[in-house]
Length: 432
Image 1 (cartoon, rainbow, N blue to C red):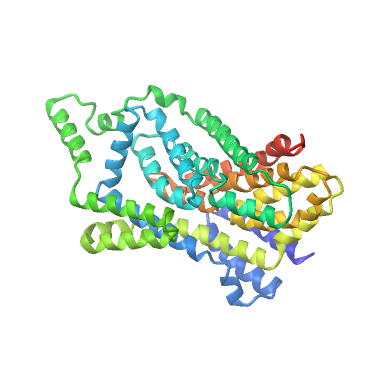
Image 2: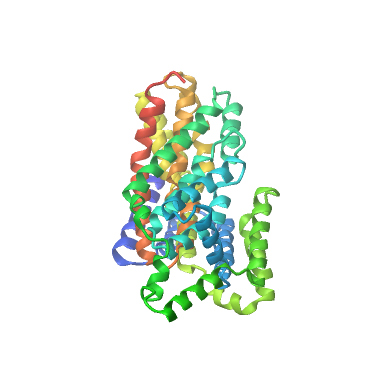
C-alpha cells in the first residue's frame, strides 16, 4: 500500500474515532500527524510542525478574545440594536444584511477570512439574541464572503486570474466573478428557505425582551424592559473604545493589509489594559476546544501536502481517459481538499497540474477554471476551513459539539453537491 493511500485511510480513521468516541478530533489529528509523518513519510518533527496553522491560531484566539470583550461590555448588544434599526425592525432581513456586508467587503479587496472574522461575531451574536438558527446565520455570512470573492479587484480573483495568465491559459474575469456570485447567492436562497428564514418575518421583534420580563404583564416589568432597552443603546466609554478598536481592525485589514489575527489581539490587549476586569471575563470565553480541533486537523493536512498526497491525487485524475470525467474529478479534489486546507493554495496547485489537460482543448479552460474556483471556495462553510472555524468559534449560546456536527454535515452536503452542479453548468456546455 502506498504512503499516500495510507495517509488518506488514517484521516478516515480519525473521523470515525472522533465521531463514535466523542474525542476531540484535533487531538486525534495531532497524534495522526506525528504517527504518519514519522513512521510513514519519514519526516522530521520540524517538518511536521511546519503544517501547524500559526496564523489561523492567532486569528481564532484574537478574534474570539476581542469579541468576547465586546460582548462583556455590551458593544455587541449595541451593534445588534443598530442593525435592527437599519432594517426597520425586520429580523427576516438580517441574514441578508450579513450576506451583503461580507460580499461587499471581499469584492472590494478583503481576504475572505478577514471579512468573516469581522462580521461573523456580530452576526452570530444577533442570531443568539433573536433565536435565529446559528447554522442559517453562519452559512449566510460565509456564502456572502464567497459571493464577492472573485471580483476582478478581489484577492481570490486577482490570484486566480494571475495564475491563469502565468500559465498561458484563456481566462475571463467576468465569468469567474459571476459564477461564484450566482452559485453562492443561489445556495443562500435555498439555505434561507430550508432553515426557516421565511418564518422570521412572523417573529415579533421584542421576543427576547418578552421572555426576560415574563411577557411584560406589569408596570414593574415594563419599567425594567425600558431600562434594559435604554442600557443597550447607551454609548459608554468602554463601548466607544471598542467600536473605535473594531474600526481600527477593519482599517488595518482592508486598507493596510495587516494580519487580522494580530490586529484583533492587539486591539483586545489595549482594551484589556484599560478595563482589566472585562478582560478576565472574556479570556475564559476563547473557544479553546475549537482552536485545538482546527489546528490539529490542519496540521495533519500539512503532513499530507508535504508527503505529496495532494499532488498524487491530482496526478491520478490526470490519467483518466474521459476529459469531462477528469474535469469533474478535478473539481471534486478541489472541493474535498479545500474543505480542510487553504482554498487559494488548492487552486494554485490544481490549476497548474491541469494545464497539460486544459491545453489539449478537450474542455473549456474558462469553464473548468471557474468551476474549480467555485468548488474550492463554496465549501469554506466546513468547520475545518478558516471561515467555517470562525463561524464555529463565534457562535453564542449553542451546544458547540452539536453545532460543529451541523456545520460538518452541511459542509459535506456542499462538498458532494457543488462540484457536479458547477460542472454541469460551466464545463459540460463548453463554448466559454
